[in-house]
Image 1 (cartoon, rainbow, N blue to C red):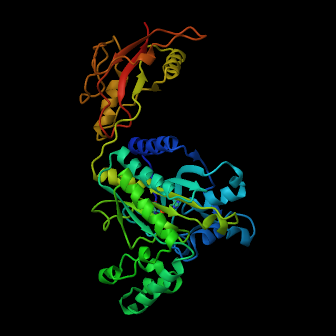
Image 2 (cartoon, rainbow, N blue to C red; image 1 turned 180 degrees about the horizontal axis):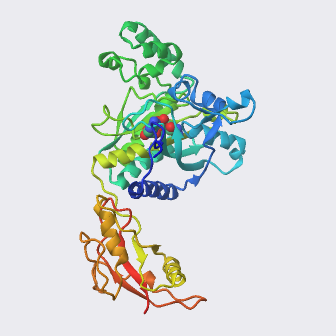
Image 3 (tube, helix red, strand yellow; image 1 turned 90 degrees about the vertical axis):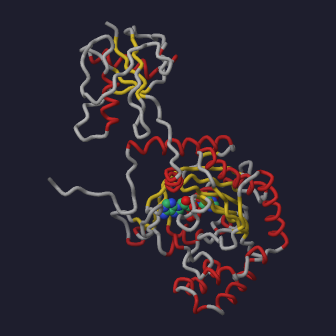
Amino acid sequence: MANPITAPRGTRDLLPEDGPVWDRVEEVARDLSRRYALARIGTPLFERVELFARGLGESSDAVEKEMFRVSGARGSEEERAEWALRPEPTAGIVRAYVEHGMHVRPGPLRLWMIGPMFRYARPQAGRYREFRQWDVEVIGDPGPMVDAELLELGARFYHELGLADVVAHLNSIGDAKCRPAYRDALVDYFGAHEDRLTDDSRRRLRINPLRVLDDKALDVELAAGAPRAIEHLCDECRAHFDLLRELLDTLGVNHVIDHRLVRGLDYYTRTSFEYYVAGREGQQEAIGGGGRYDGLVELLGGRPTPGIGFGIGLDRTILALEEQSIVTPDSEPLVAIVSSEPDFARRLEVAGRLRDAGLAVRRPLRRARAGRSSWVATAWSCATWPVGSNVSYPSTSCRAPSGNRGDPAHPLPSQVQWRPRSVPTPAVSWAPARSGRGSRSPAGCIGAATTGT
Ligand code: HAM
């Protein structure tokens, strides 16, 4: 046998048993996007390197260290060096906003997307080279009401998934008017303690002093004594922040002020936030984060337009759900066509009718090989129970599906009462079954259908 080829480091396959929890988180994100009147937007998985360099900042980790450059097999040297897989969606969305002249639409524009992002970081638990985000952006609203609305939306997402103890860390990093004075204060403070900084922080101090606060290895005492952004806000930024906090209290959004929260991307102004599971701040990275970017549209060639958004890390959200043992219910029940009827066309026709009625239909599972997990065997017994015949079970470990058609736990789904349309349909009888259950099952089997005699 040839050597098997493995997935690239830092990526993961989504296996059938992972489906239900991914379906669930994406379903909650989509449903909330609908309920918050957000419109879907899609942008390419790769963009010009310049977009990220300009938008996120040359000194951001995402650009400086983690950019996934892509090249076409052909094309000029210049063209080949030009693109990168997107490390985050905001820059691409704002690029699309400017490119399509979306400022003329009735605003503010409320947008969402779900998709993969790519960062070439050292893989570790919860840090992948390919990961998925639910992203929300509102472009054209200066806040702070919309800031509170989005912070509440993120918190609601975790709540609706059943994730407990989520807390939003909040800070304001000011704007172009007041941030320079804050930067100077940081340079003075950390400059006086350079010997206590890591090499990385010393470098950050020169390029982007705010990001020294972001250094996980920063001396705790030194960090505690550092100048605080909210103490350097101008009157407008201060008023914005105070009103936001008031609104969050009114809405009951669990939040704390985090003076070290500066975010890793350069486009942020004023409101910055990250979601954590309380008590896991040290061990785990943020499960989501975002903030205001009032200068980004202009930076990317548009008119001065405020914006705010967040990205929720779906991979990390799922890890957090698993840590809290939150089990996702089985997805769509499965019904399998079973028949002693040798006419395949007839079987397929019945399958089509049941699908018309909204049911999921598949062919019976093949017999599980010894050593395979038991749900395979269980689902097999369920899927192949032939109604009204006495064919024996294929595996002794299988549980018998209930032959009782009136089983209240598994009533005949009302959708099965379909009416024939143009083609004459064979009669379908129905045997409810109990098997095919279990949290890791790809789908619960609710019964077996067979063509009539
Ligand atoms: P971000 O904080 O870089 O923000 O990413 C948002 C979330 O994506 C993080 O909180 C984390 O849950 C997840 N994430 C980031 N990197 C990884 C990784 N390597 N592996 C797994 N999950 C990861 C942004 O991307 C901004 N675009 C958010 C935003 C939208 N700001 C304004 N609008």
